[in-house]
Image (cartoon, rainbow, N blue to C red; front, top):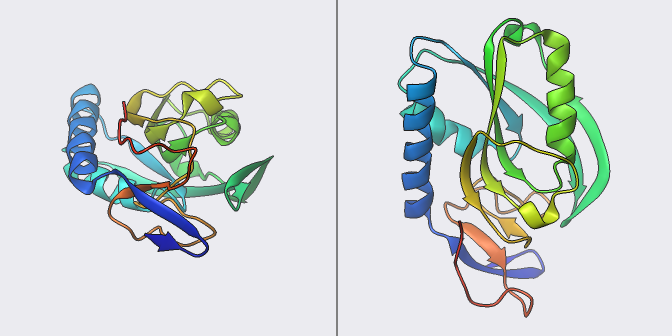
Length: 185
């Protein structure tokens, strides 16, 4: 699969993603039974994950979005820029942050600090992907899809310079640094 100037190959097939999303939704439904949490999607990457996740959660939920940026091309910029902040819908509520990927932890740390300004009742984090080798800032993930190696991935909402978000599978950069394995945690 070629996206712009780079070659990618399937890393996590859609069927495996769907199965894990269903499992995460079941756990969230169980943990929040009798409650109506607010799911806060972190744009742009979360849109596919959040859409599939919320369809499987058997609770009354509210959904809102926030948008922060810390990536340029295939690398973290080291800075977090707020593009769309939180709003009062989360005040005093049980909140579940829905993130596509946690790698350096920079954006997540910033989000968790910002969300406290709205005095939520509780805050949990769900992330589809987590790269522990890339972590530079502490990031507690309560509901995790997959732990992956510190390699660049695209698809299922994740992009390379804005492209590839619409792919149903998750792809990994196809080069000599990424041997032909599809092992994910």
